[in-house]
Image 1 (cartoon, rainbow, N blue to C red):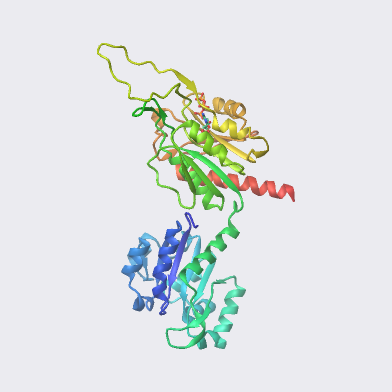
Image 2: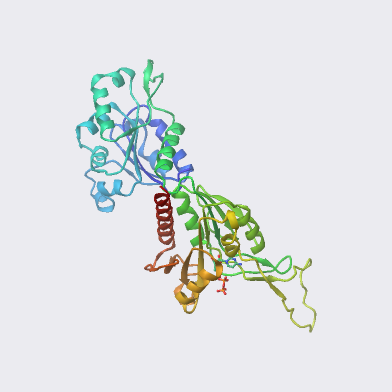
Length: 406
Ligand code: CTP
């Protein structure tokens, strides 16, 4: 899976370019965003329209396009990518890369990028075996360019030998390996709770709250993006499933409790759900009816299990890092600090959810990260940025733990 990964795909002009169309689909199915640059000769094999339709992105090709430079710019194209992939990589583009020639947008991006580059060569066997290509490939390898293939097989030109581009799914696997080796939370398992819970009153009514699930879902996506095996236990929300995350849908707090504790053991738990504190003491089997002149029903409530507290007290199954949220409307820092101790978690992300902050249901959040020995005030930012920053803190925490153990 490649959730949230941004791939800049450079398509150069060879017959294998038709496979790039499938490659774009396969990358996107795994949650990656794909932006494409085509060389002039690539457009002789496949059309920018197909590439744009499959990538659902603008296709770039002209180094001197005023609009492209104003909108994005060739430097920005690589800056906005996590990885540059050249597929197919013809002998011509490999030669230009080795020599540092930058006479079109594709080669200029390749010269300007500071991101890792994976090349998937595709050419005739004699071109692949030519001394010039051998030299160029070893120069590029010595500079850190990674190679995916080529492989041996029948060629479009009727010959047989090494030089065929490897299949799109094999390229995807190479990319997945590249990211999982580099992923800071690879090998870690995370449980995230998100959204509201619905507490049934009768078959048609329930008690709920205004949580949208945006923050919790973004955290699950960010952790998965850093390589953690992530389980998202979510109440009813309109949020899309984050890519690369295992989703467990529940309705009530008790179901969320069972799903979250049932997902143990884990290394990380982040409780971002707005769990209903109470539920009706009994769920009526039939719909409560109005009786003429009768008094409104009175709901008898009982307390729900506390998921954060249970995960924090899970004995030898306790995750190494348990993070809670504190939704507060008054004395945000003092209440959240006390809540961290009361719940037994390691960190608390405190947020002010007073109506005028627009936090509940909104896209932005202003939070404070409270640990046992520090309080860090973060500026107002998008919930997706809060998620990324929290995931980075979590990754640093585990990197420090590993360093201390060594
Ligand atoms: N939480 C939980 N299970 C509950 C209640 C809360 O896991 N039954 C978690 C939330 O997901 C959050 C943290 O506990 O991470 C704090 O939630 P919050 O609503 O701020 O606190 P409460 O425990 O409900 O306390 P209060 O309503 O008194 O502020």
